[in-house]
Structures are given as structure tokens and as C-alpha cells.
Image 1 (spheres, rainbow, N blue to C red):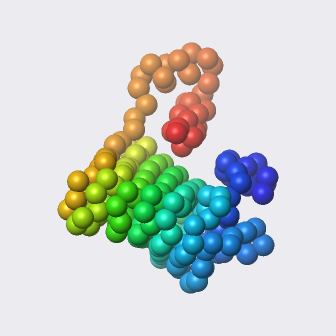
Image 2: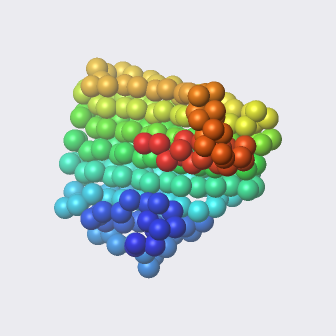
Image 3: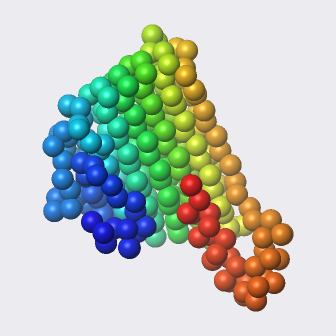
Length: 230
């Protein structure tokens, strides 16, 4: 899958893979053994020998649901998402982690050219589970972006790790709504949620303009730096 690196800057590694492109599942690019995959649902039934990597790339439109159920213990699930939308789109990820010592680690990078709503829901249904979802959105001119995040740690599920965060770089004409929240009923190891707006500072702009770059070139460089920031 070297082309994924070249075209989408996706870091690939030894893993069981499920690949989606433009909202469609790519059977020929996927290689998985520990996963039961059905319409909109990914069930991880047994502990894999290597991590599971869910790759979701390309242009989306309409309503998209992804339900991820981690049922096996000692499982690492990584999800890499790089999406754009030119029509209204709803992107929804629902994670249930019932596998002790299991981790779900997701990074979403999105460029919104119209109206985009991203909904994240993570449920810790076993102790010592981790759910990390970091979302980074570049909101272009005259767009509307809504980001909702909800993390729940059930009773008697101690020492869970939870982090749902949003970061947005937006055109001045863009409308942004961010709502991260948590419902915690046990003692967590960590429970974090955040929402931030990124804005370039004068020093950055002046330095790049001083190097002879035009206004559009400066804007493009700053946007690329924001999207690629880890």
C-alpha cells in the first residue's frame, strides 16, 4: 500500500487493515483476520497478533456511520482518517471498548468546503481501556463545521484513558461549533477533552512574507502546517 503514503501521506505499518476510500470499503486493499466486518460495523472478536489499522480516506458526502466494537482484550486499534467534503456530510464514529487493556487511537484530518458535522462517541465498558480521538479540521470560506464529542466511562470501569479533542483552523467567514463532553462514573487514569481554534500569528506571517512568498503562498503553507501537525 505504498501509494497510500504517496497520495494521502498515510503512515502504514505491519497491521491487519481495513481500507475505505470515498466512503466505500476496498476489499482488495484490506487484509484482516481478527475482524468481523459488516455494513457500517466493525467487530473485533479475538486478540490480533499485530495492531488493526482502519484507513478512511477521500471525499465524503451524506451520512456516514462507523460502529467499532472492541470485544477482545489486549488489542490495539489505530484509525487514520483524511477526508474532504464538497457537499454536506455527516461523519459519525461510535466506539465501544469492552476489551481489557485494549486501545482505540484515532486521528481525523478533515477539510470542509461546505457543511460538515463530525460526531464522536466513545464508551469505556471495561476497566483499563483507552479511547483517543483527535480531530483537526480546516474550515474553508463560508462553511459550517459542527464537532460533537462524547466520552462515557461506566461504573466500576476504573483506570480508563479517555481523550477527545478538537482543533480548527477557519476562514473568517466560517462558522464553527465545538462540543466536547464527558460522563464519568469511575476513577479514570486520565480523562481529557478540549476544543481550540488555531490562528497564525504575525511573526509567522511576516517571516514567510519576508522570504518573498505571496499572500496565497503564505496561506497555503500555514494551512499545510496545521493539517500535518502531530
